Image 1 (cartoon, rainbow, N blue to C red):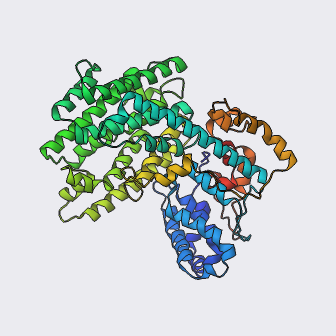
Image 2 (cartoon, one colour):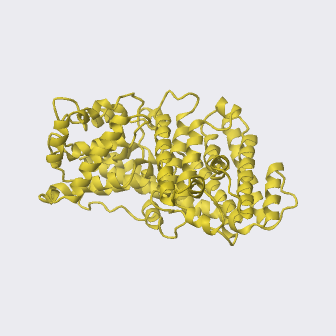
Image 3 (tube, rainbow, N blue to C red):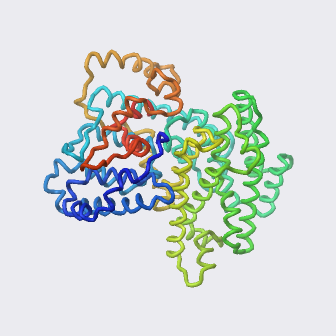
Amino acid sequence: MHGYDVSPRKFCWFMDDEEMLIHIEENYTQFLVAMTGVYRAAHFMFPREVELHNAKLFSEKILQKSLSGSDTRNNPAIMTDLQKQIEHELGLPWLSRMDHLEHRMYLERSKGYNLQMGKTSSCSLLDSKFAIQLAAELFTNRQMLYESELEELKKWSKDSGLSSMGFGREKTTSCYFLTATAVTLPLQSDLRKVVARCAILVTVIDDFFDEKGSEDELESLTKAVQGWEGEGLSGHCKVIFDALDNLVRDISFKALSQHGYDAKSLLQDMWRETFESWLKESDWSRKRHAPTITEYLEVAAISIAIQVMTLPACFLVIPQVPKHILTSRYSPITKLTMITSRLLNDIHSYQKEIHGGKFNMVLLYVKENQGATNEDSIEHISKIIERKEREFLEIYMDDAYAGFPNEWKELHLGTFKSFRMLFDTTNAFDSPTALVQSISDAFYNPLVMDSRSTFSSREETLLKPMKERWSHPRKKYTDDDLLIKSGNRSERKHGTIPQNSRMLTMNINRRWSSKTWSISRRRSSTIALMCPSINSRVLSKI
């Protein structure tokens, strides 16, 4: 995660030792922590890393065996917490995890991990009650900030008329949840609200094209967007255009006032292209036309609308737009996010599309491959998604990737993770209940912490100024209130784990033979990112 280029060979060497593999399988309970570390590292697999892929399959088999076998129940007091961690690792890929909820999980578990120390084990690096409780304070105040921003967005949806359209999905809360919790930092409040507002608008427009608008209305609205002139529109079309126009004006004004450049034409062009794709898909549906897979993907990658949800916020975080944005349509990381999100959506929405008379990637693959079933199609698409995810991670973790700011990578990662979580096993976005518990845990439910934990007098002294500031009745919370003021502001701004934390993170890597089982800084630090209970990210990034 810190840009160190390391070969998987550093921790996959044991895969070439048949005797070692047999020994691990026969004595798997002694290697569970090591295999968990290998499996964690495999979450960050790049293309062509065959060794790591094989190590992932082997470690997964060992971890699955630990959950299904009876050996792990011989000492439940020791194994319970490790089993929980293994279940979590196997059940949810890193790209499907929402940072804010991950922090909550590890904070609540921090009230008492009981893990046996051994050659392949590691202990929590945050034994200090002060550190854990301070992290809990930060989490709670982030909840307060999120709740405040959500209420602001609900008011915007109501004032703009989007929440009272009378059709489709009212997803203000869901859109904000996905925006705020996927990647907690370095996003600022304005960026979260911009992404959420764009997502809310996309949801309303998508439903209007799918189920409400007549052919004439859809053509009139698209024509108005092409000319960026809403004169003559009425009803739902007028509400949608006015909300879009005001949103683009607001983002353009902020980009101009903060960074001195006008992004209005770029934003308008992206929305024009997106409306054209929606109209094209509506026309296909109405005529029961089945495009080729190539034709479909060219349109569907645009109609998923990732670009109009993510790039507007990107224009607000750096002083100037990268040149490649001005000279080409989309960067590789944007294209990967667009196509992967579309394919994830298609896998879990094809049955709905059948009833609506539409085609998507699942159905088109069956049509173009004689004898193929829907299951064959899903398997084929899943392999494409897996390959695209590895390509995305390679770009995301490459500091040398030319012309693409790290802040933009974080925004793309947030969008990528949101779609990955939504369509991990089902279509959670369209479900009335799938996100309810997660939203409650993210915004409303208090942490369940160990009530016996108390601060020392010195720790109370250190924490008092922050508590007083957060508890001020008239104080409006900002992102800076939720960051511990480190001596180096750039570390907080760019999400860099301080050097002392890196040293602690490296201690997790235990040598379990004369050879090194050491996940390098590049990959070992990913463990820290996924486990705030062993990493200062809980303190400085919640």
